[in-house]
Image 1: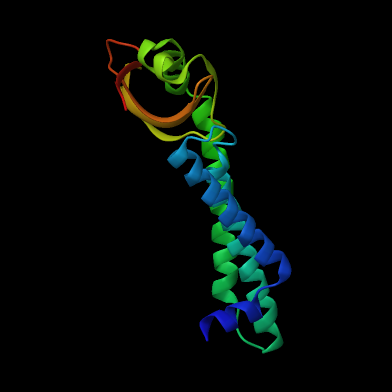
Image 2: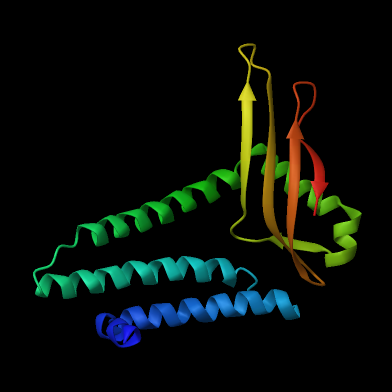
Amino acid sequence: MYFYTLKFFMSKRTKVIFIIAVILLGYGYLCRLINIFFFWDSQTFGWIVALFGLMFYFFDLIKTRKEKNQKNTWLKVGIGFIIFLLALSSFIVIIIKNTEPYGVATEYLKTDPTIRKEVGEIKNFGLIPTGAVSLSTTEDGVSSGQAAFSITVIGKLKNMDIEIYLKKTPETNWTVISVE
C-alpha cells in the first residue's frame, strides 16, 4: 500500500531524478568495488541528486496536499532545510579547497612515493573533498590546529580515496601526521 501512495504523489520529473540518483550512487559504489576509474565522483553527485529528488518529492506532496486543503508547513521547512544543506555544503567545499592545510595536503600527496607507487602519476584530485579544519589563535597571533580531509586522488594507474590528517603547532607550519 505504501508504494502505491508513493507512486501517486510522485511526478515523472521526481521519479527520473531519483532513478538518476540511484544510478549515480550505484555506479559510484561499483567503481570502488571493482576498480572502474571513470567518473569516480559519481557517488558524491548521486547523494546531491538524491537531495534534489527529495526536495522535488516534497514539492509534489505540497501540490497534492494543497488540493486537499491540508497544511504544508513541515514540508516547506524540509525544502528550506535541503536548500540550506546544499548551499552550506557548496560553501564548505569552496572554503576547504582554498585553505592552507588543504594545499599542504595535496602537495604532500603529489610527492609521496607510496601514493605515487600505488596510483601512478597523480593527474588530479576529486571535485568534492570533505573534511574539517580546526584552528585556534592566541592573543599574540600564534596559531595551532588540526585538519582532516578525505580526498579522491586520480592517478594514471588508478583512483583512491585517501584520508589525510595534518597538524599545526605554534612552532611549526602545517605538517602531515597520517595518511590512510
